[in-house]
Image (cartoon, rainbow, N blue to C red; front, side, top):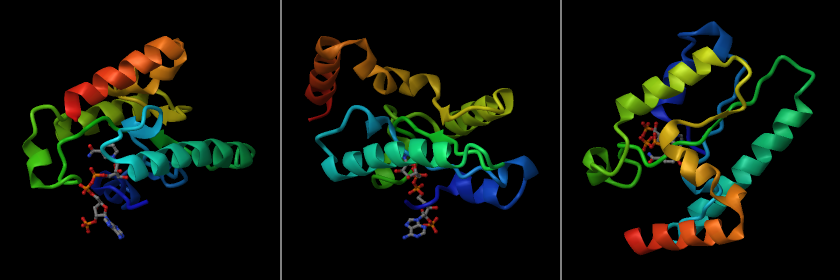
Length: 142
Ligand SMILES: NC(=O)c1ccc[n+]([C@@H]2O[C@H](COP(=O)([O-])OP(=O)(O)OC[C@H]3O[C@@H](n4cnc5c(N)ncnc54)[C@H](OP(=O)(O)O)[C@@H]3O)[C@@H](O)[C@H]2O)c1
């Protein structure tokens, strides 16, 4: 899993308390796969699973495993055009919401900005809702 630019900034030690906080970055596709990027989606689901196990294994240590699951964000991950795609969340807004969550909840396990919540919890409202969400998403993007 490549580190993000934000991870690199944090790991420079700007805020000491983050040093023992590995920040695996999953994605909005971890719970609802995107058929547009099937392998990527599967790796993010695996990472989400791995983060939970790692958190449990490290529960009696000072290491806190915090998962960050971004929505679609304006970076160049998917090519130059993504950085200005109006459908993507502006990077600055994403970083500031993430920092707010990290500051306000020292025990946070998953950092979820508001925009990612429908994807994250799509599966928790029953099979029918999940299927409808999956269909609606794919009819929009494919
Ligand atoms: N952007 C989104 O819409 C989005 C949505 C969901 C999840 N995510 C996840 O968020 C994380 C960061 O994505 P991003 O959008 O910030 O992408 P990004 O702007 O393209 O940044 C990717 C980072 O990974 C580094 N990197 C790439 N390949 C590497 C390698 N082989 N070894 C070491 N470093 C490597 C790059 O280093 P250099 O700067 O040196 O090139 C860069 O810092 C990823 O795990 C991605 O899957 C992103």
